[in-house]
Image 1 (cartoon, rainbow, N blue to C red):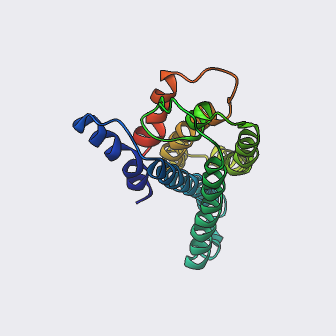
Image 2 (cartoon, rainbow, N blue to C red):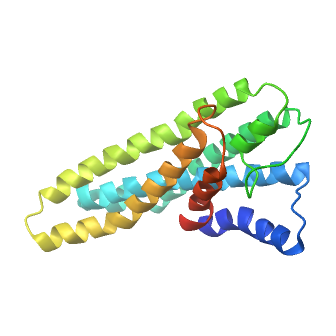
Length: 216
């Protein structure tokens, strides 16, 4: 459902604009797209962390897995993911709505996102960029640290398995998750953690495809 949501927020509107040759988006729609994109990507961010914790329990604590990952804990993890992602998306949407746009308002992207909107603003975006770095560290840095810690324990536990078949089975359950984590955070760091360092270009649109299409 999360992956369908991430695609639905950006791709259909882009295809419609291409088909009808009307490549404009109202200001309100742009902010709405920005909000829902960051909401869904934020939930994805925390769910990937929860999945890493799930694999840690399954491989490193198999005897206590059913009690440590029961339905109540699963609901708490999902609810926390939605709450944190909602706060992040709302914060950025409100912050971007305080900026003034004097034109030309040509977004060099196929959906509305923070770095491209910062480029169009005729008012100072310094506070917005600091907010993006600060919240980004919480939203991405903490989950990355937790995922890395989980997989360090998983790797140590798998290497202690004597049979090659057992090690292969354990690693195979983690490979798809690790691939998504690498693409997800790699694209995110490229998009949001280099503001002001380089001029936004067509490369950003190519990287954007990873989070909106390839990753889901």
